[in-house]
Length: 413
Image 1 (cartoon, rainbow, N blue to C red):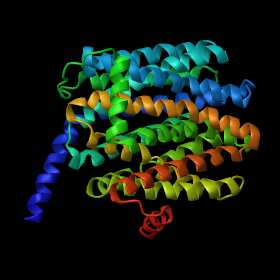
Image 2: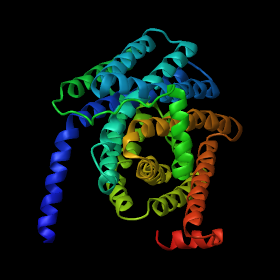
Image 3: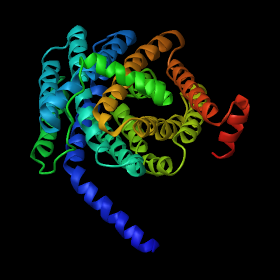
Image 4: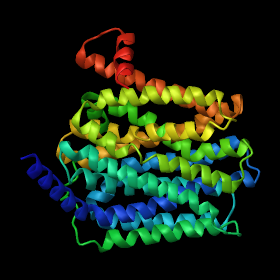
């Protein structure tokens, strides 16, 4: 009987993968271009002699656009459908990235990054709502872990593209535009249909998003506040770790190698964490991963300029980059199935708000403390997420002393 069940499960997964294969291919190409754009922007600003704090502000503009787009892009998806929304938003990014290749001005680049973030949050909304509509709670973590694996493998590939012999300053951004244009093809030509959309709820898009945020606060407060922290983690990593490495005297190609290797670690735990989350308590899992990141971040504040930097960053990335997938599972388990697009919009809006703060907080901390400031901020954020997870466990299981929860979490790591 167990064998029959395994065959049925494999059949379900093979059918599911056929449904989402074209979407994930287009998304992978998009992530390659987006990662190259993020890192190249930071490096190009530093090469122009722009102060670290200004570079942080320019990169924060991307997440500011991401935040604003979270309020409005759900209406685009509802009105035009998943395929057309993906194509239109990817085309917008092609246009603004080409503008970035033409003119080297921090002010213009801040505007470009804002529009880039505004459009890409809509693409993420398309992909996440499409995927979440394909599965039930029992498989959500596993499919979302596959989505996150594609994200990070694409992001890693984008870092390796920094090694291409592109001698002119604007050429990397032209490559980015080509990748975004290429990403449109498999998504728009797929014969598979995404989930059927219900009509958008009444009211303005801002009020709908705020209403969904309010529902998340009531039904899944851990997801609400945790996604803010996850946004800080990811945006700071992509935007400011290249700055840390530059200040540690790494050359551009060495930074590309380092970031590429680090992002190869990001997918390693996505699938096992997804299966673990589906079969156990997502909140308890999150508390353990947060505690691991607290320890790794504390070690990194003392071992930045040593041979242990890369191994510790690999552990840090491997664990910290599972936060968003677990938190998305917490939210989608609690929210009604017909609210997938709104739930995705609310999560991405909150993620973007955290993402706006991440580079800014790290740049300020690095201005005051030096390179160690990056991981000082990371330690504080991971500790906050750990506190939220333990508070959630307390609400469900009774108010045991905080230290008892730490012992329970640590005993099973």
